[in-house]
Length: 535
Ligand code: ACM
Image (cartoon, rainbow, N blue to C red):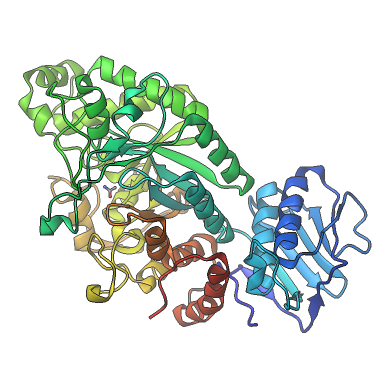
């Protein structure tokens, strides 16, 4: 079997030779800090090979796999050496050991990714000398749990596939117009009312085929969330929850109409799209948001909380004399700045609680709140403007990372999707540190601004500005992905490509990536992941 690591390590050499692994397999982990990772590896090896893997506490002598501390490296970095005497994995952190374990597993035959014992396989790994570290600290995947609910078991399975790709940020889109999916004790109607929609539109939005008449519901209890957060932490994945505001709040307004601008009783949205119903930016709504976020930050230890901020239609703010008065009272110029004021108030609450706000790139328009991270989705212009203004940014542009878009321009051969075309190659060849901005990119982000903060043309970023680009993330919006298998079809293999550009500083070579991917897909086969076949 060819050696095919995804993502590709920064430095790897494979001397001639192979370490055979048999039933006498044993491990050693002298450092107490790494015992959970050692147990994780032992369990994975046991599950697939059927060999019990005793892990000694100290004395690597005679052990097949040794886990050791080496404080030299950067966060998440690791070294792995495999020779005739065994394999030695070294890192300065638990996360580094965990990333190295994923590499070690990929050196085995693909069947090592099985969760039940496989027979008739000669287990072994090639001799190797690997020194590896991530290019970016944020290597993310976003899952939309609102448009279609993802059961706990699927979320865990998705976290497993993230872990094998060294992805480390799970951005969980928990609320939107079509469903509120997180239990909030103080506001039970958010899930009693907001987690259920009457029906779901059939087919593509543009086709106007009506609804299916079938209710769709689901939410995560706080206990389930704690369980998932712990599961992710075992895999060194941070979960960034998203509570989208002030738009994309139809489900919350359906539950508590007083949050909205009209006072009307509306229903949880049954169609896709962008809606006029929006939170009103008054003190009691700000208090509501902070109360919700208090519970959210009690559940999620991540430094980051995503507040959305995208596609907030201001018609109701324009039409409401009461909100016009609030705009005057807040001393801001218009509705856009009012969104900036509103997000700023919530941001202040997060900061008081030691957290950092993330928002979609619209939050630049009303003045990005202090310390906020910009998630650049309409293009990369939002990120460039953000880092030039001293903000951190995450690259999530539609053209390369929107995994809900078609995977090929030949839509007729693909299951129904929202539109677009983001090919595997588009994802792989995306550079998270842009060298130029094209007109289309700037227009999509800042087209309506009288004075856009960036212009088309070459981009010069200082080392400091480059360091503010935290990383890259793939988006799995689920309007057109009702089943978990649909999510896997859209996620893979494009997420393999995004994992590689997020992790690896090795030179990019698409044909060689495809060669590695052919082997890598056998691992996904073993795991039963329903990926899209290569063209
Ligand atoms: C988005 O796609 N509305 C962030």
